[in-house]
Amino acid sequence: MTSASSQRGLSNLRRTVTWLFITLLIIYLLYSFNLILNKDSPECTNSLSSSSELSTKESISTTFPQTENSKNSTSLSVKENTGEPETGVKHIVFGIAASTNLWDKRKEYIKLWWRPGEMRGVVWLDKNVTIKKNEDLPEIRISENTTKFLYTNRQGNRSALRISRVVSETIRLGLNNVRWFVMGDDDTVFNVDNVVRVLSKYDHNQYYYIGSSSESHIQNIFFSYAMAYGGGGFAISYPLAKELEKIQDRCLQRYPGLYGSDDRIQACMAELGVPLTREPGFHQYDVYGNLLGLLGAHPVTPLVSIHHLDVVDPIIPRMSRIDGLQRVFESMKYDTASIMQQSICYDKQKYWSISVSWGYVVQITRGNISPRELEMPTRTFLNWYKRADYTAYAFNTRPVTKHPCQKPFVYYISAAKYDRSKNQIVGIYHRHRESYPYCRWKIESPESINAIVVLKKPDDNRWQKAARRDCCKVLPSNNSYLYIWVGNCRAGETSEM
Image 1 (tube, rainbow, N blue to C red):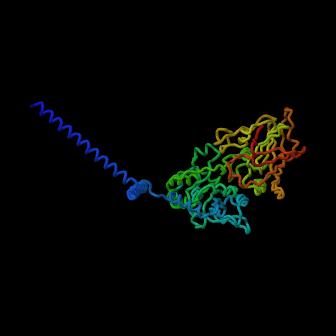
Image 2 (image 1 turned 60 degrees about the horizontal axis):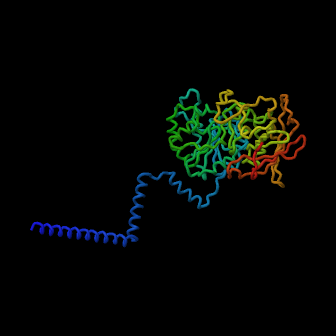
Image 3 (image 1 turned 45 degrees about the vertical axis):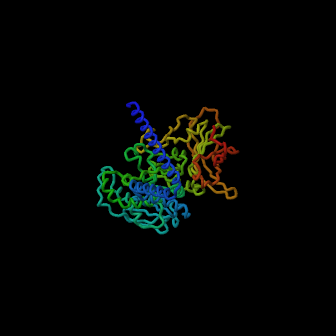
């Protein structure tokens, strides 16, 4: 009896387990079938999508609040769609910081580059000056009083406060259709067309602080590598200038111990969180002596400005500073984009190395000198502390050669004209007369060349392409004149020795 009872219990358990398994299988199949039927339901999809989108938007708005710059990102696409015109000189306002004591001398620098009736800007002085009629100068205004601001730097001058506020005072004039404010000193000379070319690369609706550091490594350490040096000039986009104007007076009160005006501007930019955008064509030129080494090997970038022209030697020897600059400007008007752009070539028959700084100078050196060396500035200058220290610069330099056979023969620009029939600029460079040491090399001396004629086509759009140094080629010449072609490198063309 016990055995039969056990068998019946086991049989009942098996039937129960079997029915339980079948029930679970049916439930699973019904659930899966229901999911398949509702897979493509638009109501469900839209609901999930809306829910996900709402969740994402809420997350973004909670985590990243919309800023002025994020609004400007939208306006950028609108600007492109509406065909906003390219940035031109009419969209730029210049603010020039000047001193009454030096005005009679330095206003001549401003006359070199200022274009009356075409440009907008203001010269800010500390006192009234006598203005002659028909002088080609910007509007002149007197800066506001700055006695309320504390200045504690014993080595500096409190005029730095007045000069730093040129930005805000220019903005408060309320000029219309402004995209950029460009600041400079009264001894800063601008290449206006290259200012426009450089600023055209950037969206003026965004926050931009554009300029360059000093050539002096020590100056950059004392002040800041993050600072745009004011003498070389710097540019501030309109929306950033508006923000700076709002905080500048309060900002100045927080930095009474700073030395100059440009470090005060940078301190306020740091508070606004805007870094320096570097454009190496803004030249502070914190150096003494001869600029031949720097301007004869200018980097492959637009030359925007030159500063400290009262400190360095005249850029063309035996001429006044103004007359030398006027001569360069005479050639520059035919091709503002290419002024002082270097090209390198070789006269392989005479074994000469030739470096052309277009519109300024040509140098011929005996022997083969590599492009790597020729594109490096020669130390014809001293650093800001009047020391011949090659470690004092924020760029590579090379020494002035002591070899008697490798002293370069230098030819400065003397005249330029445009040949309309050939669409060609003809520049004439005459040799600078100076003594040369005796050379034992059996290489023909360039001293028989009295003048160099450089032929070049205008190239206004050169900076819309990838940066590249121009090529040059020695053309058939006579005994006293050397002819050189300069222009865009053709396919496969290089500066091979």
